[in-house]
Length: 326
Ligand SMILES: Nc1ncnc2c1ncn2[C@@H]1O[C@H](COP(=O)(O)OS(=O)(=O)O)[C@@H](OP(=O)(O)O)[C@H]1O
Image (cartoon, rainbow, N blue to C red; front, side, top):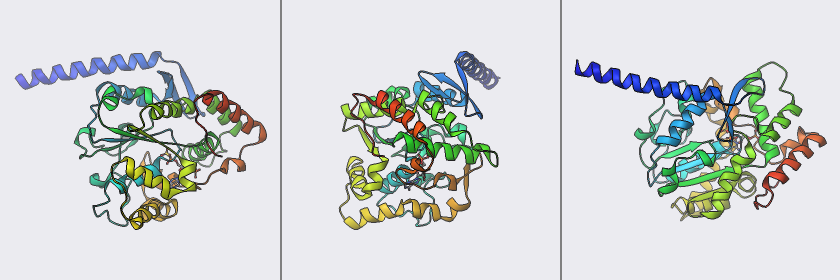
């Protein structure tokens, strides 16, 4: 009897808070992301409604641990690469099987826990609190939505960012392959326009990147800000920096070289699990590995589109000191 009473109390309170959140989300401005997904604007950024719910819960209740490492990135800026690198660096002394896919949830010991995974994964996702310490976490959420405990603890943040034109082109390819199948690709002019106005999932890209950039300039011991272009140009130097930041400096050059190779696009793309495996919503693992080059946008954007993104970038990043090679 007592158990029943306490059960009904729990259900009632959770229903009412969910209803409250749902009502709040319903009131938010809404738009359609590239003709495929309803997104709503919350605290300055656009997300699908399920993501807002997840972000609300994370922002209000997540307790960071002092040895947590949070990886943060706007979509298509180098997330997959950064995840693989950090896993390898943090587990240097453990024997990660050579052919292990470092990115799926099959091996909880060598896994990056995505904050938003509860809405993306078709499998039950491990609770953030049951992930073994040191926790390696990832989010695409912007800086202003991080819970206070992340900034008030010794938890470190590593952010990766990429030039806007390659980010947009990468996003456009991914989107077309996942959402449009054999249909015509989403018109690129429209994608450029919506990217510049910020009306896309996790957008605006510019503000998402700037939030982390600004904070990384103030708290260098807390946030490391990496650029995809610099990682491509000199992976060893950037991985060395990453190891140092994570408190795992490389003593032997060969260890560093091994990790750079292990996490290379060429190697990851050829792993069996990435050729045939699938993680979320049936999205093939292979779609996270495309060309991985700097300047691929030149193959897709016309002068007008290039100019539009350049002007927006100049305006948004003005006086921030943030620049990208492209
Ligand atoms: N290991 C490694 N090295 C270099 N580049 C890599 C690597 N893994 C993925 N990629 C390229 O990164 C782009 C995908 O970005 P994300 O991993 O951030 O995507 S996601 O947000 O997690 O969906 C996408 O870029 P594009 O090729 O320009 O589309 C991937 O090819």
